[in-house]
Image (cartoon, rainbow, N blue to C red; front, side):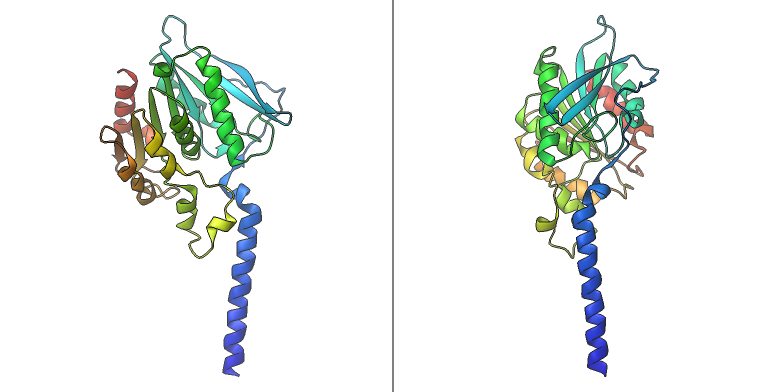
Amino acid sequence: MRKKKIFRIISIVLLVYALAGLAFFYGQERIIFNPLPVPADSSYHFNEPYREAWVDLDKNTRINLVQFTVPDSLRKGIVLYFHGNKGNVRRYRRFAANFTKHGYEVWMPDYPGFGKSTGTITEPALYEMALQVYKLARQQYQPSQIIIYGKSLGTGMATQLAAVRDCRQLILETPYYSMRSLIGMYLWMYPLDNLLHYQFRSDLYIPKVTAPITIFHGTSDWIIPYRNASRLKSLLKQTDRFITIPGGEHRNLNGFPKMQQELDHLLIR
Protein backbone atom coordinates (compact mmCIF):
# COMPACT_ATOMS: atom_id res chain seq x y z
CA MET A 1 0.00 0.00 0.00
CA ARG A 2 2.85 2.39 0.91
CA LYS A 3 4.62 1.68 -2.39
CA LYS A 4 1.45 2.41 -4.32
CA LYS A 5 1.04 5.72 -2.50
CA ILE A 6 4.62 6.72 -3.22
CA PHE A 7 4.23 5.70 -6.85
CA ARG A 8 1.04 7.75 -7.12
CA ILE A 9 2.75 10.83 -5.63
CA ILE A 10 5.69 10.46 -8.00
CA SER A 11 3.35 10.04 -10.95
CA ILE A 12 1.45 13.21 -10.02
CA VAL A 13 4.68 15.19 -9.59
CA LEU A 14 6.00 14.00 -12.97
CA LEU A 15 2.68 14.79 -14.63
CA VAL A 16 2.63 18.31 -13.19
CA TYR A 17 6.29 18.76 -14.21
CA ALA A 18 5.56 17.64 -17.77
CA LEU A 19 2.41 19.73 -18.12
CA ALA A 20 4.11 22.83 -16.74
CA GLY A 21 7.03 22.29 -19.12
CA LEU A 22 4.70 21.97 -22.09
CA ALA A 23 2.81 25.07 -21.00
CA PHE A 24 6.04 27.04 -20.89
CA PHE A 25 7.28 25.67 -24.23
CA TYR A 26 4.12 26.68 -26.08
CA GLY A 27 3.36 29.80 -24.06
CA GLN A 28 6.77 31.36 -23.55
CA GLU A 29 6.06 34.18 -26.03
CA ARG A 30 3.26 35.36 -23.73
CA ILE A 31 5.69 35.37 -20.81
CA ILE A 32 8.58 37.12 -22.56
CA PHE A 33 6.51 39.51 -24.72
CA ASN A 34 3.43 41.48 -23.72
CA PRO A 35 2.58 43.63 -26.76
CA LEU A 36 -0.24 46.12 -27.15
CA PRO A 37 -1.13 46.43 -30.84
CA VAL A 38 -2.91 49.44 -32.30
CA PRO A 39 -4.38 49.95 -35.80
CA ALA A 40 -1.77 50.95 -38.36
CA ASP A 41 -3.92 53.85 -39.53
CA SER A 42 -4.41 55.26 -36.04
CA SER A 43 -2.68 58.42 -34.84
CA TYR A 44 -0.45 58.92 -31.85
CA HIS A 45 -0.97 62.07 -29.81
CA PHE A 46 2.37 62.85 -28.21
CA ASN A 47 3.30 66.18 -26.69
CA GLU A 48 6.84 65.78 -27.97
CA PRO A 49 7.60 66.63 -31.63
CA TYR A 50 7.79 63.43 -33.62
CA ARG A 51 7.40 61.79 -36.99
CA GLU A 52 6.82 58.20 -38.05
CA ALA A 53 8.70 56.00 -40.49
CA TRP A 54 8.33 52.41 -41.63
CA VAL A 55 10.98 49.72 -41.98
CA ASP A 56 10.02 46.71 -44.10
CA LEU A 57 11.84 43.50 -43.14
CA ASP A 58 9.86 41.15 -45.40
CA LYS A 59 6.41 40.98 -46.98
CA ASN A 60 4.78 40.19 -43.62
CA THR A 61 6.94 42.23 -41.24
CA ARG A 62 6.67 46.00 -41.18
CA ILE A 63 8.24 47.94 -38.33
CA ASN A 64 6.77 51.22 -37.14
CA LEU A 65 9.53 53.61 -36.12
CA VAL A 66 8.64 56.66 -34.02
CA GLN A 67 11.26 59.39 -34.32
CA PHE A 68 11.26 62.04 -31.59
CA THR A 69 12.91 65.06 -33.15
CA VAL A 70 14.92 68.12 -32.12
CA PRO A 71 15.48 71.37 -34.03
CA ASP A 72 18.25 71.15 -36.62
CA SER A 73 20.17 73.91 -34.86
CA LEU A 74 20.37 71.81 -31.67
CA ARG A 75 20.75 68.33 -33.15
CA LYS A 76 24.04 66.67 -32.32
CA GLY A 77 23.25 62.96 -32.58
CA ILE A 78 20.74 60.17 -32.30
CA VAL A 79 19.69 57.58 -29.74
CA LEU A 80 18.43 54.25 -31.04
CA TYR A 81 16.14 53.22 -28.18
CA PHE A 82 15.09 49.57 -27.87
CA HIS A 83 12.32 49.40 -25.31
CA GLY A 84 11.02 46.78 -22.90
CA ASN A 85 8.61 43.89 -23.35
CA LYS A 86 5.30 45.61 -22.61
CA GLY A 87 2.86 47.76 -24.52
CA ASN A 88 4.27 49.87 -27.33
CA VAL A 89 6.03 53.18 -27.88
CA ARG A 90 3.28 54.99 -25.95
CA ARG A 91 4.59 53.37 -22.76
CA TYR A 92 8.17 54.55 -23.31
CA ARG A 93 7.78 57.93 -25.03
CA ARG A 94 8.28 59.80 -21.74
CA PHE A 95 11.91 58.69 -21.69
CA ALA A 96 12.69 60.48 -24.97
CA ALA A 97 13.07 63.75 -23.07
CA ASN A 98 16.14 62.34 -21.31
CA PHE A 99 17.91 62.66 -24.65
CA THR A 100 16.11 65.33 -26.68
CA LYS A 101 16.94 67.92 -24.02
CA HIS A 102 20.59 67.30 -24.87
CA GLY A 103 20.09 67.64 -28.62
CA TYR A 104 19.67 63.95 -29.51
CA GLU A 105 16.93 62.63 -31.72
CA VAL A 106 15.37 59.44 -30.32
CA TRP A 107 14.21 56.64 -32.60
CA MET A 108 11.99 54.01 -30.97
CA PRO A 109 11.00 51.00 -33.08
CA ASP A 110 8.07 48.87 -32.02
CA TYR A 111 8.73 45.14 -32.29
CA PRO A 112 6.57 42.89 -34.51
CA GLY A 113 3.09 42.77 -32.99
CA PHE A 114 3.73 45.85 -30.82
CA GLY A 115 1.93 49.09 -31.61
CA LYS A 116 1.52 49.47 -35.37
CA SER A 117 4.26 47.00 -36.27
CA THR A 118 3.29 43.75 -37.98
CA GLY A 119 4.89 40.34 -38.33
CA THR A 120 5.99 37.46 -36.13
CA ILE A 121 8.56 37.83 -33.39
CA THR A 122 11.69 35.72 -33.63
CA GLU A 123 15.13 36.44 -32.23
CA PRO A 124 16.71 36.76 -35.72
CA ALA A 125 13.88 39.10 -36.79
CA LEU A 126 14.53 41.37 -33.80
CA TYR A 127 18.24 41.54 -34.60
CA GLU A 128 17.46 42.28 -38.25
CA MET A 129 15.04 45.01 -37.18
CA ALA A 130 17.73 46.64 -35.05
CA LEU A 131 20.24 46.44 -37.89
CA GLN A 132 17.89 48.02 -40.42
CA VAL A 133 17.07 50.86 -38.02
CA TYR A 134 20.80 51.42 -37.58
CA LYS A 135 21.35 51.47 -41.35
CA LEU A 136 18.58 54.05 -41.69
CA ALA A 137 20.26 56.20 -39.03
CA ARG A 138 23.60 55.92 -40.84
CA GLN A 139 22.09 57.75 -43.80
CA GLN A 140 22.09 60.87 -41.62
CA TYR A 141 24.60 60.26 -38.82
CA GLN A 142 28.15 59.06 -38.35
CA PRO A 143 28.84 56.23 -35.86
CA SER A 144 30.37 58.81 -33.50
CA GLN A 145 26.92 60.44 -33.28
CA ILE A 146 24.94 57.24 -32.64
CA ILE A 147 24.08 56.06 -29.13
CA ILE A 148 22.53 52.61 -28.80
CA TYR A 149 20.24 52.32 -25.77
CA GLY A 150 18.51 49.20 -24.49
CA LYS A 151 15.93 48.95 -21.72
CA SER A 152 15.07 45.59 -20.12
CA LEU A 153 14.17 43.19 -22.96
CA GLY A 154 15.62 45.65 -25.45
CA THR A 155 19.10 45.33 -23.94
CA GLY A 156 19.49 42.03 -25.81
CA MET A 157 18.92 43.71 -29.19
CA ALA A 158 20.99 46.75 -28.27
CA THR A 159 23.96 44.66 -27.19
CA GLN A 160 23.90 42.47 -30.28
CA LEU A 161 23.70 45.55 -32.53
CA ALA A 162 26.60 47.29 -30.77
CA ALA A 163 28.64 44.10 -31.18
CA VAL A 164 28.32 44.20 -34.99
CA ARG A 165 28.14 47.96 -35.69
CA ASP A 166 30.14 50.95 -34.48
CA CYS A 167 28.55 53.55 -32.22
CA ARG A 168 29.47 56.31 -29.83
CA GLN A 169 28.37 54.30 -26.81
CA LEU A 170 26.13 51.52 -25.60
CA ILE A 171 23.87 52.24 -22.63
CA LEU A 172 21.93 49.43 -20.95
CA GLU A 173 19.16 49.87 -18.39
CA THR A 174 18.25 46.79 -16.33
CA PRO A 175 19.94 44.22 -18.60
CA TYR A 176 20.18 40.45 -18.16
CA TYR A 177 23.21 38.19 -18.51
CA SER A 178 21.31 36.03 -21.01
CA MET A 179 17.69 34.99 -21.37
CA ARG A 180 18.71 31.42 -20.52
CA SER A 181 20.31 32.49 -17.25
CA LEU A 182 17.37 34.75 -16.35
CA ILE A 183 14.63 32.18 -16.97
CA GLY A 184 16.83 29.58 -15.32
CA MET A 185 16.62 31.48 -12.04
CA TYR A 186 12.93 30.55 -11.92
CA LEU A 187 12.72 27.35 -14.00
CA TRP A 188 16.04 25.77 -13.06
CA MET A 189 14.50 22.31 -13.05
CA TYR A 190 13.86 22.29 -16.83
CA PRO A 191 16.24 21.66 -19.77
CA LEU A 192 15.92 25.24 -21.01
CA ASP A 193 18.52 24.80 -23.74
CA ASN A 194 15.93 22.66 -25.50
CA LEU A 195 12.78 24.49 -24.41
CA LEU A 196 13.72 28.15 -24.78
CA HIS A 197 13.12 29.82 -28.15
CA TYR A 198 14.99 33.02 -27.26
CA GLN A 199 18.57 33.14 -26.05
CA PHE A 200 19.57 36.85 -26.20
CA ARG A 201 23.18 36.06 -25.33
CA SER A 202 24.35 39.40 -23.98
CA ASP A 203 27.16 37.48 -22.30
CA LEU A 204 28.52 36.57 -25.74
CA TYR A 205 27.99 39.96 -27.38
CA ILE A 206 29.26 42.37 -24.71
CA PRO A 207 32.91 41.26 -25.09
CA LYS A 208 32.63 42.13 -28.80
CA VAL A 209 31.48 45.71 -28.19
CA THR A 210 34.34 48.13 -28.80
CA ALA A 211 32.36 51.26 -27.86
CA PRO A 212 32.16 52.46 -24.23
CA ILE A 213 29.47 50.65 -22.24
CA THR A 214 27.45 51.99 -19.32
CA ILE A 215 25.03 49.78 -17.39
CA PHE A 216 22.38 50.92 -14.90
CA HIS A 217 20.77 48.42 -12.55
CA GLY A 218 18.89 48.62 -9.26
CA THR A 219 19.49 46.42 -6.26
CA SER A 220 15.76 45.86 -5.68
CA ASP A 221 14.90 44.72 -9.19
CA TRP A 222 12.80 41.55 -8.82
CA ILE A 223 12.04 41.10 -12.53
CA ILE A 224 15.67 40.98 -13.66
CA PRO A 225 17.46 40.43 -10.34
CA TYR A 226 20.59 42.44 -9.65
CA ARG A 227 22.64 39.29 -9.15
CA ASN A 228 21.86 38.20 -12.71
CA ALA A 229 22.87 41.51 -14.27
CA SER A 230 25.95 41.86 -12.09
CA ARG A 231 27.44 38.81 -13.81
CA LEU A 232 28.06 41.14 -16.76
CA LYS A 233 30.67 43.06 -14.74
CA SER A 234 33.34 40.47 -15.46
CA LEU A 235 32.80 40.93 -19.22
CA LEU A 236 33.26 44.69 -19.30
CA LYS A 237 36.31 46.61 -20.43
CA GLN A 238 38.26 48.51 -17.77
CA THR A 239 36.85 51.78 -19.02
CA ASP A 240 33.22 50.55 -18.99
CA ARG A 241 30.94 51.29 -16.06
CA PHE A 242 28.36 49.29 -14.12
CA ILE A 243 26.35 51.81 -12.10
CA THR A 244 24.41 50.40 -9.16
CA ILE A 245 21.26 52.23 -8.03
CA PRO A 246 20.67 51.26 -4.36
CA GLY A 247 16.99 50.46 -3.84
CA GLY A 248 16.25 50.82 -7.55
CA GLU A 249 13.54 48.58 -8.95
CA HIS A 250 12.91 47.47 -12.51
CA ARG A 251 10.61 50.27 -13.58
CA ASN A 252 11.69 53.27 -11.50
CA LEU A 253 15.40 53.85 -12.17
CA ASN A 254 14.68 57.06 -14.05
CA GLY A 255 13.23 58.49 -10.85
CA PHE A 256 16.58 58.28 -9.06
CA PRO A 257 18.77 61.42 -9.14
CA LYS A 258 21.88 59.26 -9.44
CA MET A 259 20.75 57.78 -12.74
CA GLN A 260 19.66 61.14 -14.12
CA GLN A 261 22.96 62.74 -13.15
CA GLU A 262 25.03 59.94 -14.65
CA LEU A 263 22.94 59.88 -17.83
CA ASP A 264 23.21 63.66 -18.23
CA HIS A 265 26.96 63.38 -17.81
CA LEU A 266 27.17 60.78 -20.58
CA LEU A 267 25.14 62.93 -22.97
CA ILE A 268 26.94 66.24 -22.49
CA ARG A 269 30.41 64.84 -23.15
